[in-house]
Image (cartoon, rainbow, N blue to C red):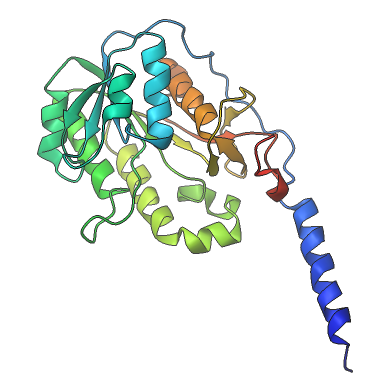
Length: 259
């Protein structure tokens, strides 16, 4: 039986519309029992790896706003001026070279490392695993026990939570992030892993939260993600936990645009 092309076209459109309407319908997820981020700085500095831009820079912004001492590892060829303008101390080095991270940690009294590493391939190797492995090893050697890793939804036991298209496009990233998560979990450090979904810019709205529900998936503003990273950094109850960063306002495909 043959169908007119227009009928087939309309059928496809209706299927797509139905998918757009129901995709990402999640409802609320159980909120992690953590205190809000502290209003005052912690004791000791924080090394932010990946803090020159995007989510890492937002973490630097929040820490500096409350007076934390922050150092940012910056590759020799990269621009660290945005972090410097926030009052962070720039330490030149490459996360793909462990001695550089060790030197950065030797430059002050650090209480924690926050890694938001993730980038295009660098000479054939991604930093998502190798760079994070170097950071974990350097922190352990320096006696810095607290480590917060920003990963991605789709890594580890959250594979099915990531949309099919994201799993296809980010397959290499997800695999490397999974290796980094696994390595951190066996490192002996006081770790917290935070998995965001799709990331967006613009100001924080304060409605996102952390959940241990590995089925959860949403888009999230980077500034909101940064607040959740600082929240986990401040709260000892987050040690040994893996969280998803969840924004209940942005669970559907058509909720990607900023409200």
